[in-house]
Image (cartoon, rainbow, N blue to C red; front, top):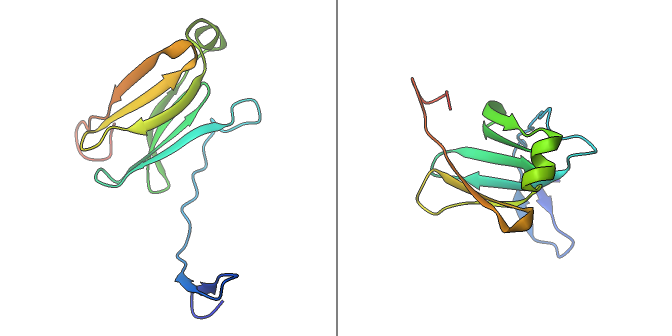
Length: 113
């Protein structure tokens, strides 16, 4: 490491910043992360587990929800997620072929979802 840069095994240098840590209560052994999607335009990150969805800005949790075990059993666990290009919409795929579209909308200022 040289002045905030690290050398790769091939000898190339790249800059390293301070990582952002997401201290999510949803990430547990029984609910591993299935998707971590960044929307650079909105400056948000979606953290998706098999039974929950959270929206983050930096290391601050803006909002989210957890699904009950009964709901997950009925509707299927979340499997993957992807932000739709140019929109504040997160598409989440669940077991059984279900696709959920969640629209990110800010209310009463930019920090409340």
